[in-house]
Image (cartoon, rainbow, N blue to C red):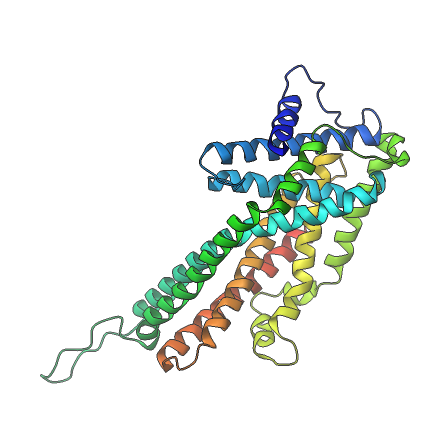
Length: 357
């Protein structure tokens, strides 16, 4: 019954005879918001149908592309419900937004573990190669045994074991995330979310405030999202982060009074608020004088910041493994410092992009 309802909603939403969504300043605020939500719900249902057609079982997406589309649509629907919450029935929108957040997180974990492993193994290879290039050539002063072969430095010695340790831990985490995603998407909870999105494709529960003109109401709510972002970014240590390689991120990672997780939290908040601001521009695009490419560039930089920070946390977790060899611990320490330096580099890039406007 639930699947038939989703198929019917998908057919209705994709009917070429259906009226196109209202965009821009045309119509009421509710017309514009409902049109965007229906469009994203249709994309969600299309990805779900594609995943089931490609071999997904129990509602689980059968391909990485289908999972990506589900996650992408879930985030956009949830962001729109958050930013334009005053226009929707709170008793309906808040639970749906929470469930869409759960779904997006469940689908993202496996990909994040895979990307983190690739990042760390690539960084280990890069650091080991740099050590070999910097290693001086030893020329014996008199006949004797040949000089040691390149690549015998402390980082190269421990790098292989550090890489194997990280691969074991992150592969296990990825496998667990994959199993958890399959279990979640075969659950009644997921089917309830999919049914709610199917209803959303044809019906959006709006309040009386949504009857106001789009230009008046959506502009105020969109600017509020931009203002929250500007306030959070203004609270960051922009002047300090604007100095290249100031060492703050590495010192914070080593200091007990300010762990890296706490220091990274304000930057992660800015990344989330930037996402809300970017998606608000999709719902209600208007010219505020900001270059179109700037939000996307800022998002890429903050995503690199998140990846490097979480990779450093994974290295810290690996270094806590009992009875690891000193060479392995040394390699993990160098790798951790490298990732925290990339965090610092991303902050430096963000400041210059942010202050350019």
